[in-house]
Every structure is written in C-alpha cells, then in structure tokens.
Image (tube, rainbow, N blue to C red):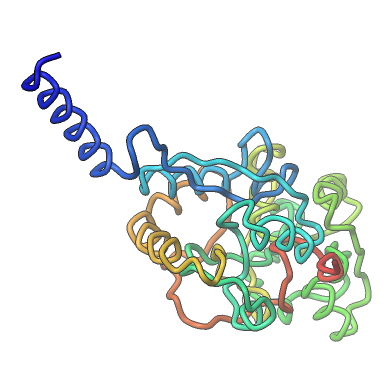
Length: 289
C-alpha cells in the first residue's frame, strides 16, 4: 500500500471514529439505560414489558438515545432489592418510588429524580349500586354502614380504623384483584386501594365497570419519581432533563393504562407520602430486608 493510500485509510478511520463519538460513545458502542424492575408487578412492570413503567422507561431511554436493559428482582422487600441491584451496580435507575424527603433520608446512597406524575389511593365502587359516593372526596366524607375493602397495612386502613369505622374488610396487597372481584360480586360495597392498580384492572379486566377516583388527604396523594445512585450525578441530570421534556407523553401512557393522576404536572419540591421505603402499591411491612 502506498504512503498516500495509508494516509487516506487513516483519514477515513478517524472520520468514522469522530462521527461515532458525536453520536454517543466509541465506534460500535451502544448506549444502554440499565433499569432495576420487578418481573411480576403489573400494572407497573413485568418481564414481558407490558407495564406502564416499562413504557415510561422506554420513553426515557429513547429520549436519551439509548435502549433499555433490565435487571429483574422482586420488589416486595425493597431494601433487599436495592442492595442487590441498584446499589450493587447491576443497574442504574429504578422507577415508581415515592418522591418523599423521608425516603431520601433513609436511603442516603440514592438520589430522587424530579417527580413525573402524581397519584394515590382511590375510592372504587360500582356507580349503579353506590351513586351517593359520587361526591365523596376524602375518607372523612365516607358514609357509615358500608362494607369497605382496603389493603392490609396501608394508610386507608389506618385512617378508617382510627375513625372507628365498623365494616373494614382487609385484603392482602400482593393479590390486588381479590378486592375488585369481591366488589364486583357485591360482597363489599366500596374499596380504597392504590389508584394505578385499581385503574388498570378496571380498564383492562373489568371493562370500566367501576368508578375510580383519587381521594384527598395526608398520605393519600403521592408524587412519583425514579431513583439513581447518589454519586451518579450525570445520569440524574440527564434523566431530570428528559422528564421535563416528556411530561405530556408520560400522562398519555397513564391514560392508556387507565391510571388515575392529578392533572397538573408535579412540582419538584419536598412532598408528603407514606412511611419511608414504602414501595408504591406495596404494604408497609414488606420493606423489611
């Protein structure tokens, strides 16, 4: 090969390398957003990628010019999950955590992103049977005498018990459809459960048979964020920038899945929520390592 030919080949190679660097990473390198997620936790995530958090993860990754790669771990015991996934460096981000100052204080090695939607516990009932519940906006307004289904060890159960409500029927939150099945069968009159789960099942499995309405009150409304490792400030900044740009697309995903949410975009300021380290939609006792 002549000297001029070698120089020409070298120039082409350098040109290709520069082009690849401009598009993110060395030549042949692919950007990957490594996501920690539960493989069996619909409507949030699952291994077949049918959850709405799967869709939101794809949206974030696409906006970053990356693809999603999952590390799967059951989230019933959140501390154990984080210790073995995010904090072990096996993945870099987890979605669907409460945007709450107490959470950040408890888990000093993680950082919360800006919140990307607001939801909470919802009153669920059959409109034709309980039309008088249309105006109920908080647990305090719930009339006496109803058989009300709640998930065990959640804020609705606590508030109703403190009020001395007579007919509380407790269900295990690991089996979310049981309370809706009993509601449809008329074994209970209403339920107060996690809104995203109720909204999803109502839309997908019950053809909209129930009214699902978010309730007001302390520990009933949560802002939802993602978490990254605290020292990964570059990823935190990129994700926050993306979340700000795709707010309307996230709300469209929630609509597609029947997830109830507060209409205005959540502001990234300290929020209220349940006890620290409570995974969204899980009972408080499931966070023990």
